[in-house]
Length: 200
Image (cartoon, rainbow, N blue to C red):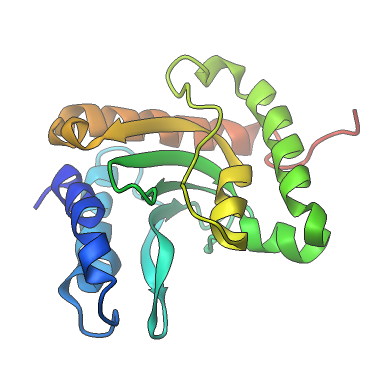
């Protein structure tokens, strides 16, 4: 397996997998173990400090948007708070989104119905802070095509990133190079103050 193969397999097989429960499903195992293993291998030549996790959902329910993420343990070990690098799988299953993202659940807890607006405003300020990455990670907004607090929160929490069509996932060298750029942006955000934003 390779990182690109794992990402494509998740995107292509997820709709059919959702017909049954995730418990014991081979694709759930790919998301929890196989794909994280490939991401760890890809990161090994870039930065070995990351914690890697994949989630197909919780309990008996598949997630509307599965994810595969890399966390700097000095920043966060969870997708609920802080900021992290994540592959997201839009509902149309025709693409994969690489996103440098803010933690969604913490914002929902702190800001309630205003969480989306808070995350978008924060994202605007953080993009300004990372302006030197704008050309290499040009996606300023993402659309996941799912209703619900978490998918909509992921959209609002996006800072910058890239979108891959399924055919693009066959270019492993590009995926690794883009991953290195994402890690560099993550490191730059950490060095430049993280999510702390002065009142404007």
